[in-house]
Structure formats: structure tokens, C-alpha cells
Length: 258
Image (cartoon, rainbow, N blue to C red):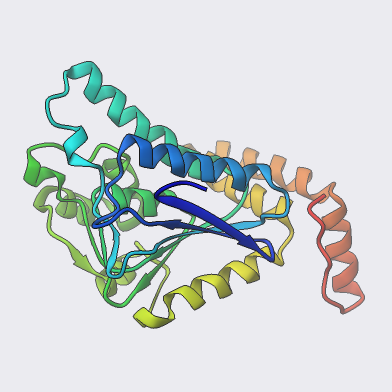
């Protein structure tokens, strides 16, 4: 598909693999390829779930390509930040679950990519960090907003201000990731979770994602109104009728995404 970002799909699961040695540095061209992969995930109805992983041993991503940041003027810097906001923001709008399978180093733009995904699974050797303060800048692709929402304000500020990495165990305890597995089991575990998600009703999954994305940061009453709307929209689908009927008939449901 691309030079550094590839996509392989089978049985409803798309695996987006990043492979730009040595650290999966996220250049403009790299981000364009990632965006193209998301286009395909969104466009192809046969794809129900996506996994984002690295093909580099011990390295999810070292973050933005620093060589493309040097010497920018204010406009150029703003454009570079807007690039990350745009691509990572799409992950929340793609109406399908996206899983980050994190191996090894996951810092800077790498952790910001992982945080923009819906679920995060980590290898035991994974390390997470926002080291931008060590360069004299701040996290610019969503780190200052998503990290405190996931791990809490105090822990988020500590990571953002100290710029020091945390272990996979610490990430699990703090809620940054949902599970930690042995390094050699990461790929299998991510695919197993993806297959379970692919068997669910696609519209219902999309509505769950929409409810959460819409409700975060809004008053409870507004979030509940969005939830009520999404419930009705999901209830009126063929899949909902099938799911209710299958439950009553004590058989597995056969969801078709409509």
C-alpha cells in the first residue's frame, strides 16, 4: 500500500503495520500513508476492526520526525501540529474500533497515536512517555488533552512535565492501556480481541464510539441526550432485531452491519 505503512485485511480485521526504521518517525509522508490506510478502513465495509501495530522489533514509534520540525516559522509549526491533529482526530471519527498494539518504545507522537485509538494493548516490555518538554516544547498532537483524560490530571501532568517514561505495568495500573501481555503474545492477543469485536454488530459499535466521543468533556445531560439518540438509531437497525431475536431463541446472532 505505502512505503512505510501497509494494510492487510482478512476476516473483517485490518492490520495496519508501521515500518519506517529505525524508530517509525512520523514525517509528513508517513502521516499521509497512515491517513490513506484509515481511508480504506472507513471505506471498505468488509473491514470491521483495525489494528495499528509496528513491524519494528522493540519500537512502536519514537514520535514525530524531528528533522522536519527544525527551522520552521510560526506558520510552518502550526501546519505541522495541524497535521497530527487531523490524522489522529480521524481515529475517533472512524466508525469502527481501532486497536493499538504497542510493542517496546512508545513516546511522543507514538503515544499520541496510541491514545487516539479506542483500545490499547501493550507488550510487557513497552515503555510510554511524552518527552517533548526535554526538547523545550510541549506535546502537540493531542498529548496534553488525551493523556490527562486517560490517567487523571495529576499523573498526566507528571508525565508531561517530567518527560520520563513509564512501564507497561504502570500504564496498566493508571488506565493508559487495558491489558498487558507477554511480548511474544501481543500480536495474537490483538487479533483475538479484534476478531471478537468483528463478530459484534457494526452499527452498535459505531454508536458506542460516537456516544463516548460526543459525551467526553460535555455536561452529563448533553451526553445522555446523545446516548438516547444513538440507542434509537441502533435499535432501528436489522442487526438489533437479529440480536434480540437471537437472544430470545438462545442462539448466536448473525450481524450484517445494517
